[in-house]
Image (cartoon, rainbow, N blue to C red; front, side):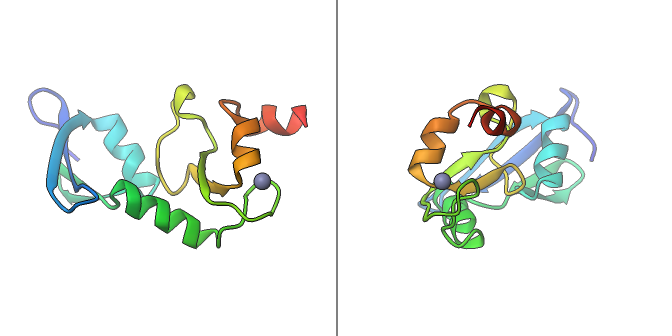
Length: 118
Ligand SMILES: [Zn+2]
């Protein structure tokens, strides 16, 4: 990919209601989003976000069959393995289905801290 003069890549996508949006993002973020299957390359200046917020949620829950990644019980929330506060992104690679309880107790901890603590 090749950034524009400001060093940015254009990311475009659709909202839950189907309207188009776009924003300029750093090359590094663009590469991460593509590598983690949240976006695809349109051309060397542009990537396309694959899922709206609702579609992403549906996709993760269906992929994980509503089974909590941590305890195996029924789950209907999305958890970031590397918390967003620590630089994790909302991507299929970084997100799993979790039950409410595990999601609450994991809060903003890394997986390593969560397991070591329980
Ligand atoms: Zn759980």
